[in-house]
Length: 219
Image (cartoon, rainbow, N blue to C red; front, top):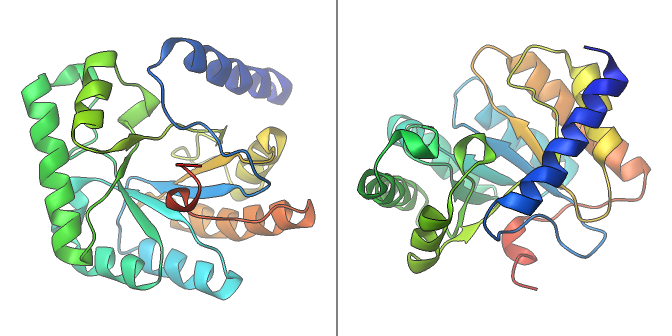
């Protein structure tokens, strides 16, 4: 796909989603950006991301699935001890309509439990798999005391598109207060790590700073 067309598609996708999805957190109203990572934890990426972020002095938010948090509790602990926020990304990354509402709520609770057991902190933010959720499930999250978090700059980097293209796509969408979404994957380790460092450098060159969602979401 032509790069200009793809950039327009990503912009249009976000604009349309804001109109039809339940209320949630799309950006903060300061200069700070939010750097977020979905789908982990994974041994191939998570500890190295934590180390990289510490070296760069960046606070981030990791959205972990319950399945992976159960499998790798030591990585959950590593991220928490490094001072990053950990959010809930569902138990098994199912599209919201692929499970019943009861199963949805149970998955959220189970994921929160695994993360809390490993980190000592219970998640307060949730990002839905594929960025989509319906009103009834959004209300269920609210009743559980959780904040719904969406996306801003999206690179679709679950695909092997190369770190240069990841950074280019993020840069095209970068604005004050943007939620940057990157993905941890077992097979795209190099892309994930290289792109993260490059995104940080590119954003800082433009005068942006970073903060975890928990520090600004309620302002």
